[in-house]
Image (cartoon, rainbow, N blue to C red; front, side, top):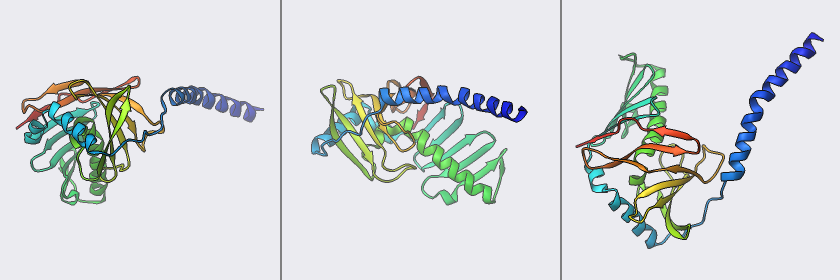
Amino acid sequence: MKLKKILKIIAGVIIFITLPSLLFFGFVYFKYNEDLPIGNQTEKADILAHKMLIALNADAYKATNTIEWTFRRKHHYKWDKKNNICEVNWKEYKVDLNLNDPSKSLTYIHNFRIHNEKSVALIKTATDYFNNDSFWLVAPYKVFDKGTTRSIVKHNNKDALLVTYTSGGTTPGDSYLWILDENYKPTKFKMWVKILPIGGLEASWSDWKTTQSGAQLPTHHKLLFFGLNMGDVIGSK
């Protein structure tokens, strides 16, 4: 009897914990899930992408040598964009990440340099963090990256820019539909990404900051009921 009672208690706890999560996921899925739209890969899509870059002063971003930010108050970055080296800090770890050749990266625990198997794991983690967290900072400037395709999709009877990453990064194959205002500046995008089971989720790109270098970078995103804070974003020449 005691065993049955214990099993009932365990089952009740599991249901109590998982049922709200399942209901929430079901609600979000049926409310927001969308199929990936089919766009037209024409010269018009490239023109729209260029208009977006002009609206964001992409030349200033290109001339920016150093960018600093903190993703969700957890991962801290100081990116030497000119030399493509980024200092990545989280918990007690630090990686001087060489983005051109990760094998040349330097790894630290509590500011002590390490040279062992842990180094390889830290470099992999830092690379994954950088790929994800920097995308939330500079994604609009990556629409002409190698391995991207651009298409025009109608959204609310206006042209929107669908960008698909066929290679590169941590999760190639992801697609993003950029929604632009009347001045061609991004206000949000919709995502079809491997790490999310729901297609078409929407995230804001509206909290822009003009940095010292003139580059425009976001300071905050809203995704469903959650906020993605980028910290004190600094861009300098």
